[in-house]
Amino acid sequence: MTTPIGSNVLNTVNAGGAPTMGSRQSDELRNNFMTLLITQLQNQDPLNPLENNELTTQLAQINTVSGIEQLNQTMEGITSQITAGQTMQAAGLIGQGVLVPGDRVLLEQDDQGVAHTTPFGFDLARSADSVKITIVGGDGQVINRYDLGAVGAGVDSFTWDGKTSQGESAVPGAYRVRIEATNDDKPVSVEALNYALVGGVTPPDDKGGVRLDLGAVYGQVSLDQVRQIL
Image (tube, rainbow, N blue to C red):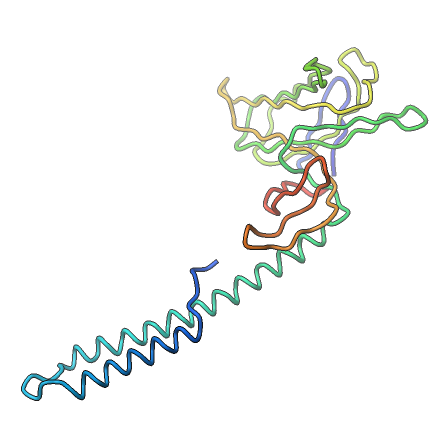
């Protein structure tokens, strides 16, 4: 849920595994190992037989190979379950609005002249005693400024009322948001977030995990880039 902001004030909403060894390759390795071990036992020097600790070490080695194979199979199963869960989670976002890294804000007017803007937000790395927001036009002109005061760490979302600093309605179009955060006059790391509508989901492939399709303007983003669902 986003909080509307007026021309005078803004209010916050407190709101893998390792490469696996093929089963056939693993079986061949174990068979070769056992063949070598049996050959070694058959041809050992009767006066200098293989010692128990040496035999134990070699048997432990083949057990290690089997253990790694089982571990890889287990990791494959876990990875598949995680991927399936992420895909289902991403599919549930289709048709919903999300906040992702970006600084774009869109302003439109309906037939009655009422302004409608897309939400925006920011992600503060830590608490700040001063957060200032500036709405900027495409030509770099400052449209309006807002001083939020102290804001806690985390994600906050807002809506702009579409007004200029003179209280007039801004021209419909695309605008940018600048976020400045400080604490004791020292900069605080902050990431601007813009609104996008999830239109589809791209399943994971060898190039990466599940990705959300946000349309031609925003392209695709990974699931972990979603900071807030609106």
